[in-house]
Image (cartoon, rainbow, N blue to C red; front, side, top):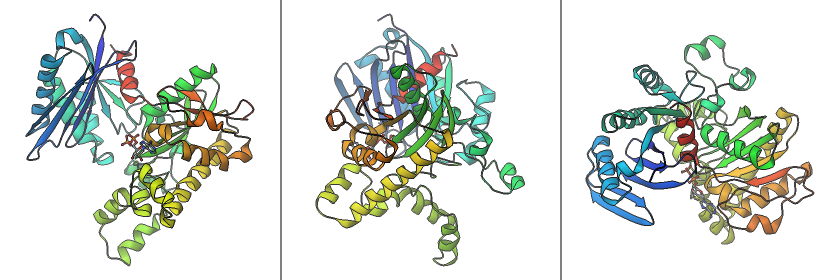
Length: 394
Ligand code: ADP
C-alpha cells in the first residue's frame, strides 16, 4: 500500500471511534470503536477488509484502548507500516471563538481546548484525553484538531449574537457557536460541486440523533440552529431543541428541580424520546403505524419545527436553491423527507416519489425536474472531511 492515510479519532468520555481514511480517494481502509472505557468490561471492535475483530476485555483508560487499537492494526491489518499514516485528525466539538479552521496540535492549541471546557463540558475533556494518548502513541506524525464549530466561526454577528445583555454575554462567552459544522461544510461543499455552482443559497438539514440546520450562501454559513450548545434548534432524538428559557425558571421555582436535573431532562429525556417514547425514528414510525397518537403528534412537532427553520432561513438568505438532507434520518427516512417537502410545496418544491424511495449511499437529487428548489440527499462523511481538513495543514 503506497497511499497516504489519516487516522481520524473521535474520542468520547468512555469511547474512542476511529477510522483510517485515504484522503485522496475518500476510501475508508479500516475503522473501529472502543467502548465502555473505565467500566468493568469493555469492547474493542476493529474492521478491515470485510473482517470484523471483537475483543471483550476491560479497558481501564483511553491510553490502553488506543494501544489495543494499534495492536489490532498490526495483527489484523493494515499494519501501521502499510498504513502510511501521515497525520492524525482529532474531532473537537467546541472551538469557541479561537478556531475558524483546523489547527496543528501544539501546547497552545491544547491550552485553548482546555480553556473551552466550560463551553463544551461533555466533549472537550474527552477530546483532550484522545489527543494526549494519540500524541504519546503516534508521536512521529502531526496531529490536527478539527473543530465542529469552525464552519460557523464567521457567522454574521446578527446571527451569532443573542439579544442578551452585552456585558453578561461577553463576560461569559455566550453566543451561537453551532455544531455539526464539519458535516454542514462537507455536505454543502459536495452539493455545490454536484450542482456545478458556487453561488448557491442552500439549507442543509443534518438529521441524526442530534439534529441541526444551516443556511449557507456561496460556501459561507450565514445561520445555524444549534447555539451556545447543541441543545438549541430542531427537535432531536432526546433534546428539546428550541424552548422558552422561562421553562427553566418555571421548573426550578414550581417543580423544585435543580439545574442539573433540568439539563438532563432537556438534553436526554425530551425530543422524540420524551414525546413519542423512543428516540429512534424507525420506532416512531412503527408506533405511528400502530395508531399511537403521541407518536404522530411527535412527528408533526418535528416536521413543524423543520418547516419553520426552512422558511426562516429562506427569508434570511432571500431565496433558496437547494435543500439537502443528511445524517441517519436525513439519509434513510424517505417518508419523513416526503412529508416535509410536501409541507414546503408552497415554495414550489416537489419531490420525485420514485427517486426519493431509492436506497443508496450516493449523493442524489430527489426533486422533480420542475421543482423550483433542488432537493438532495447527500450522505455526510465527517471522517473524510476531518481527514481532508487535516491534510490541508501538513
Ligand atoms: P448521531 O451521529 O447523531 O448519533 P446518526 O446520524 O447516526 O446519529 O443517526 C442516527 C439516527 O438515524 C437513529 O437514531 C434513527 O433515528 C435514524 N435512522 C437510522 N436509520 C433510519 C431509517 N432507516 N429510517 C429512519 N430513521 C433512521
